[in-house]
Each structure stands twice: as structure tokens, then as C-alpha cells.
Image (cartoon, rainbow, N blue to C red; front, side):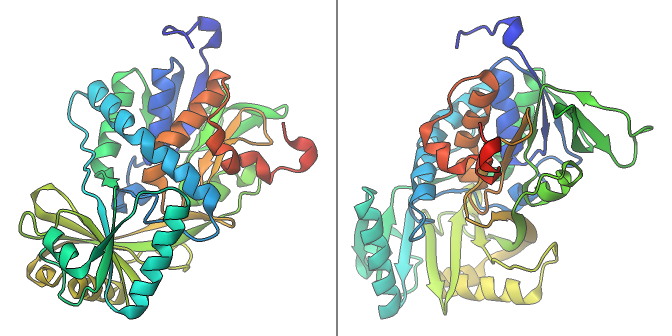
Amino acid sequence: MTAVMRAADRRQVAVIGAGIIGLACAWRLSRSGHAVTVLDPAAGSGATHAAAGMIAPASEAVFGQDALLSTSLASARLWPDFAAELARDVGRPVELAPRGTLLVALDADDEASLARHARHLERRRCHVERLTSRAARRLEPALSPRVTGAVRLEETAVDPRAVSAALEDAFVARGGTLLPVLAEPVVRDGRVAGARPVGDGWATVDAVVDADVVVVATGWSSPRVLAALGHPVPIRPLKGQVIRLAAAPDTLTHTVRATVRGREVYTVPRPGGEIVVGATSEDVGEDVSVTAGAVHDLLHDAIEVVPELAEATFREATARLRPATTDNLPLVGPTCVEGLVLASGHGRDGVLLAPLTAEAVTAHVDGRPPPRCVEPLAAQRLCPSKERS
């Protein structure tokens, strides 16, 4: 595409949802020359607000989900340029911390599981560094003496709250419009016509933000947003609870992940001593309450792995809902409705997959082929065969 978009190619786009996925799409679309309006009553306040920000395709890899691993690795490779471009647009640093991830074992069963995971990654050409317990504790002296072995992965992390704020600022600076309202797509004569704000503060339900394309990036609530269209979307909410601690600076330099009594736990260090500890995964519907049991388990397991965290100050507990799909793959791209694009269902990988999702959505709106690695995520896989384009 040329540096200056022809007027005939410039499209009106409405993005419903302003988590990291919606804002990344909106910013990229604005950079591509389109006129973009984002509609969300509380930008960055959903799953993005709770996320730990790990760019961790290898440590998040699951057996039998090779398509998601390939897509995640591709998106992780986009993050350095994505962060650098965002920093230039917003005029402040967007830190991509190359801390690396340590997967640690606390007993023989953990070691066996860790070895299987390492072999799985090596077969997929991921770089894996196996460490003895002594070598792991040289890297991270705060680790428990109970650690029996570890694997180190070259992974990074970002602060999703800071990235979300930067995306919003960069989007607005490029002339984008952010409306603090709930909205739903409007379809006329079989194709999208715009987005209709709903709820208090709007005098008439007939008010519509005209658009050639509507991108729905509303996470777990996407089925509700699309309900009026009769467009079923197999996304359900999965609750995740996360806590934040304030520890001595340099308590940890790596993200550390472990399994404690069958429960997965991770600790992600931030500049200045903040440690993000997470996260639960609870199939309990739309409940976003913080529970004493979850906070207890997260603290217990984190301290089991990093005993020094017992001296940390408790800062915050947060619960949010992740958007999970039935096949664990996000839904990205055009749908059965002309002009309607989905960018949802990212589960626990919204931060990781934001750059690739934004590139795929922008390519579609530009009329370019999207990256081939996003083919398994195509939203049209939900459509009847005769309706797929």
C-alpha cells in the first residue's frame, strides 16, 4: 500500500470495544488512513486491566494446539516493532521488557512434566535452556530452595495498562474518535451500516455512527453484542483473579511460572518492585467478585515458589473475565455478515496476540491478504459452508 491512502480507499470504521485488542485495531486502522470511531464506556477496564502482560507463546503452549502456538510465536515476533511504533506515535516509551521466563519444578513429578514441555517446544524449534536448580537460583536467588530444576525461555512482557493508555492516546492523536458508550452493530439490507450507541445518555435509539466496517472486539460479551443480529458466537466468560504486590526492587528479574499442588501460578516483575501474581481460571459465568480463597491460594503458591514475597506489601486484587472459545482459538476476521469483522475470543492471550490481530483486521479493511498464520483463527469458520467467502 502507498504511504498516502487514496480517498476512494479510505473507509469509515467503527470499533466496538476498547480493550487492548480493540484499541490496537483502531490505532493500526488509523495509521493506515481510515476514519475510525471507537465505542466503549470504559476503555481498558476489562480483561486488559487485570492482565499480567506476558508475551509468552512458549510457556503458554498447550499440547495439541499447534495452530495457536504458531500464531502466538508470529505475534510475539511483531511485538518489538509494534511497541517501537507505538512509542514514536505517543511520544513516550512503551517498555517491552526482555526478562525471559523461568519454568520451575518443585518435585520429581514437576520435573517430568517440565521435561515433556521442553521436548514439545524443541520439536517446534523453540529455543529451550534447561537449568539445574543451582543454575536457576544463580539467576534468581529469591527462588525457593525446594526448586529441583528449571527451563529458561526467551520471552518478554509489557504492562497492559500502560500499553492500553498509550494506544488510546496515539489513536486520538491520529484523529480517531473515542465515544464512551455501549454499542451494537446496525445491519441494513444484509450488510453493516454502522454502530448504534445504546444505554443512558442517548436521546434516541435511532442515533447511529455510520460505518462501512464494524469491528466487534468486545471480548466475553461479544455474543450479547451480536445477539440482535442472530449471529451466534461461541464465546463464554472465564473468570481470572490476579493480585499485585509491592516487593523490594530486583526481587525477581524473570517471570517465574510453576505448579503448586496442581495449581498453576506465575509471578511477573515490573519496574519499581511491583509483582503481578496470577491467575485463577474459573468457569463461573459473569461473576467478577474477588474471593478470599483465590487470594489465599495465589499468595500461598507464590510464596511457596518465591519465599521473599511473604515480606511484600499487598497492593491490589482484581477479577476480570477472559473470552474463551470452544476450540481455544480466537475469532479474527470477516464474518457471514458483509462489513462485520470479529476480533474476539483471545482467552488468556489477548496481550500476546494484539499486534497480529490488529494487522489481520487492518489487512482485511485495506483489501490486502492477511498474514497466512492467522488462517486458523478465521471468524468465517463459524459460517455455514455456503456462506464462506
